[in-house]
Image 1 (tube, rainbow, N blue to C red):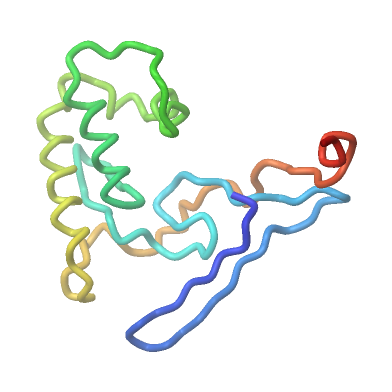
Image 2 (cartoon, rainbow, N blue to C red):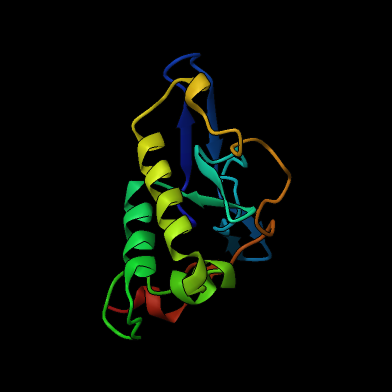
Length: 150
């Protein structure tokens, strides 16, 4: 969330760069969440309407993790993986068992969108709505006693 990023469009050649901001001596990282990319604030490609809300994912791997969690009938804590922080932050409507089949259907729609790249294939839900995540994320302080240690 602090590493510089580059966005390039293979179709039109547009290029954008992102670097973490500074607050005092700390880097301000991007904050994931919401229906927009946390770095460039562009609408996510993988969005669809589901249970009267917008279901979104960053990529197919994210869809896979969401699908595994939603499909599970026994949701235990523990285990390891980079997505463990995602589960407690999921909205209640996604965790509700009454929405399970509709959410799984929505996730399959997202999986289908992942292989498409034409603007006409874009979901009607994938447009700017201004519901981006909070503008500033976590702080990271470079240097200090830990960076100099062997």
